[in-house]
Length: 234
Image (cartoon, rainbow, N blue to C red; front, side, top):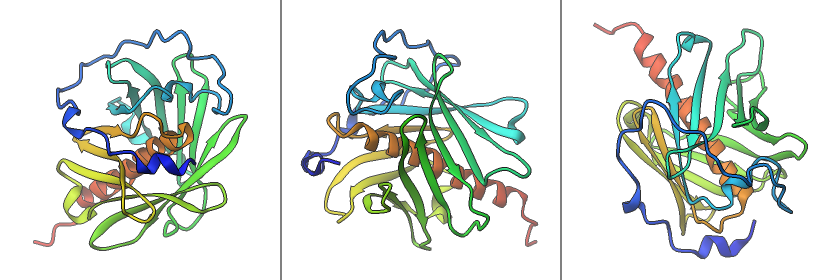
């Protein structure tokens, strides 16, 4: 991770679109999608020229058995297809990111038996472990840490408490580990997230922020389901 990336001014969040997405998205025709770039994990090349992406959930009749998403570029073209799998005896969290050709480019896996850990591995096939994301329990704020494979904290994601953010629109800041610089933002609007980061940020860190957004969404969704199903106190 290049430290100078943290010194860049934060992205222009005024430019974030608030227009409702279409019901279907065109597949990106980017011709260099499969071209290998030195130092960039295979499949993540599309993130090189990105400073904003959006994550849109897709609804299916089998929603209880998993969730699906599209990752879109700023033009509304689909970059990746994402599926979160739910298995009776499988991992606690299992999410796969695939390109438009159906090739897996990234996986998020939480295999520990203890739910209190909330530690997710981010893996790129043929490359290995890219980093980890963990939830730090805090009653008053939402606090996630993005770590490298050596478990060194690289970035933080900070936002309002789950007690206030689970049902409405919400914004989380991506900050340097000393909390002195805002280097990105995750903005949730219903079932859509808009993720911004510096254009020149290292690709693996862009991927880690994208992965963190999916993990954050899964935690929020879990809280929503709990609130919706818990017995009334009346």
